[in-house]
Length: 158
Image (cartoon, rainbow, N blue to C red):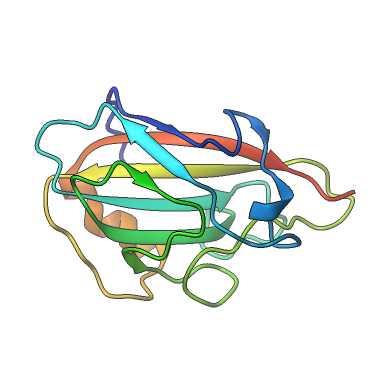
């Protein structure tokens, strides 16, 4: 994945940077996507894509990304937040085998995992087909990438 440093900041009111993700946003909880908000969007942003992955997952399905928990793209460029449990945009194929968000649920006793939420600002109204996988998404958005930000949360099941 290409990198496009920017002043954009991605945050959540549910957890801080490198802090524990609440159980309500986990696979063994209510499995709701966390609320997210962002600022410092690059000029010329027409749409956003967002994904979440766990690089600490013991089973790697798509190469270097670990377990992909969420892909959503086609988010409007004037959007600045996603509420908890958001059902907006076009969802891609997560590694659980379906579309839409699936929360953290590392194997019991596997220790703390890190969950990277990536927000990508794009210079085009890019809406790709539903069910797209992460490598395909990244290949398609790379030429349109204006800026990016990430929020990292943690989760463990003892």
